[in-house]
Length: 316
Image 1: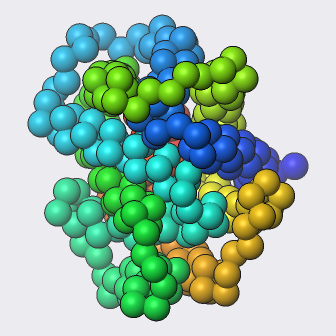
Image 2 (image 1 turned 180 degrees about the vertical axis):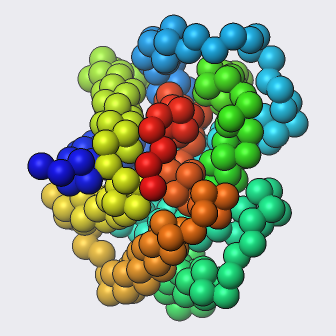
């Protein structure tokens, strides 16, 4: 098996596990507030995060070199996690993924003011087409837009913002600093809000929250292996396989069937995202904000892997 084929296979496994992770979030969201789910997800992720922390031999303190960027990233990550968990709990899985798939489009836009990138006309057209796909999914004026739709949009925007900040400061900040601040902020914020929404957790549901943390860890390891084995242009599009998992899981567990608008909108968003990825694969390294910001959105609930990919083998 070629390295690219192996990398694609690793990525498919990773995103399949991430999709399973999100199914558990949706199941738990039917009975618990996102505040409570986020809090315990972070709590159970700390032991796993310690493995990452112990491996970071980079000299330095836990004080960020770019405190304002780190603060912005931390706030964005906290918002991303809360909104994503809420969206998964109230919307069909396929709809949430369709909206979150707009991240490459948003990263392309955010790379202009934050990274100083220049976006050419073809990529602008791809962004415009992709955002049209988001409107097809949402159907403003024709369908009732719920708070969950807004949450998914906010999660996509804030997640893209958090990811692009990693691209900006990641070479100078320690991995442990980039990872730890959002997790600590989530823990503190959600702990402060927890008394307002707390519901007693039976042992079975505590176990599900533990599985969420373990799934995120395992999927992250597979994704790191994918990017260290295959080229980013081959591995990155594998994230769109999650729409298949969402359709399968939605039908099996929640009796959800993607409607025509979700299917059409998802196709448009995925096509525009693939176009951007393929265009970036032919561009110089400085013009690859999507390929170089390549992992599930930073939620600050688990030790996400974008900060570790940047230190791995950056194939293009």
